[in-house]
Image (cartoon, rainbow, N blue to C red; front, top):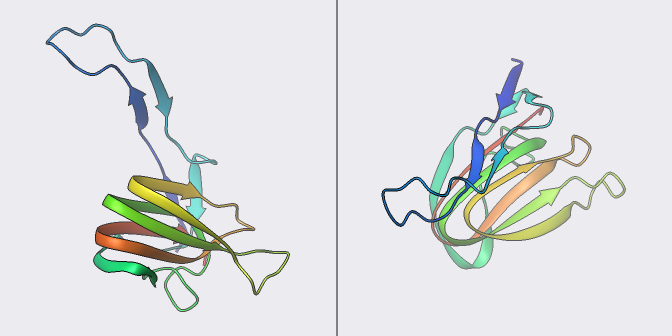
Amino acid sequence: MSMNATLTGALVVSPQTVSDEAFPSAIGTVSLEFSPRQKPIQVGSGYNHRNVNSSGAFVPLSGVGATDAVTQGLVLYVRAKVPFQVRVSVFNPAVPLVPDTAIIPITGTLLIEFDPTRYLVLLEAKGSGLIEWLVVGNQ
């Protein structure tokens, strides 16, 4: 089934509220949207959440991987209220059997769009607490 993923919203930066006054207003507003605005997708991992208790080693997060619903992730959303390390493995067209990896420390929200030729192939996390994620792609 053919679907689209769309991101709508804004990041607003403004001074801390110190009274009931509305002065000064926002310092900056950035519209949030995908490129292209409607990203065509075929599959998704579904919304996932899990209590992870692994401060010493990375554990795979279900939904993306060689035998999971998504084998070629194009959009990744991860959220954690406590510190986590997220490891992403991305297809490397120069060496197809050896993915590129990156470790990203997060506390809060992570949103990544991947190039269709360098898609997400594995998602792992290290830390202790509740983590939530969603991956969508074409395969």
